[in-house]
Image 1 (tube, one colour):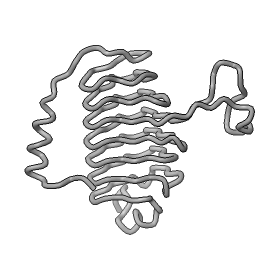
Image 2: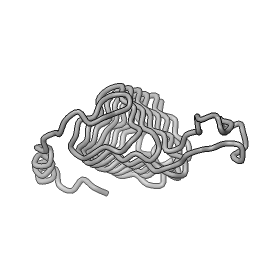
Image 3: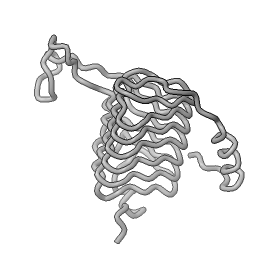
Image 4: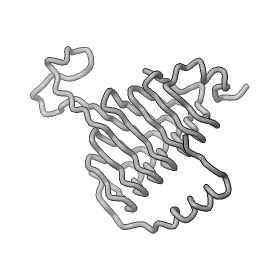
Length: 191
């Protein structure tokens, strides 16, 4: 038996939609499946948690032990993007200033929750052990180095590292030509 859901099991998850060649580990926890849309050629590995409004394009890899807490604000990944193991994305977070109470056991009227959409652009990569906070856009082709805290949006085609994450250098864009070759060879890959 495969460690990934079969086609019949995928149908039973109740996802909003999913494309072809979708591999989701049986060890992945999905909350609010009706709010999750997945494109073609997507792989989600063991021990991930996906919760809330999530949109995954095509040719995406969600590595082991990734946490995506999208809430109502949502998290979206564009085509050819990915996130490495033990990273977390939060589209909602409690206020840590001390002005409010925290945690989901406390009624919302006493909490200062910040919610904002997180967008991971086309060909973007988030390295291992990273944390991405609400409202961030990881620009197309941007890379985030391991163990970084992404609390602000990142420019396209840049390498970004650190706590907090800062631009380290500009990157080449040869991947765009390779994408054209891929599409020519493989045909249409999008939903």
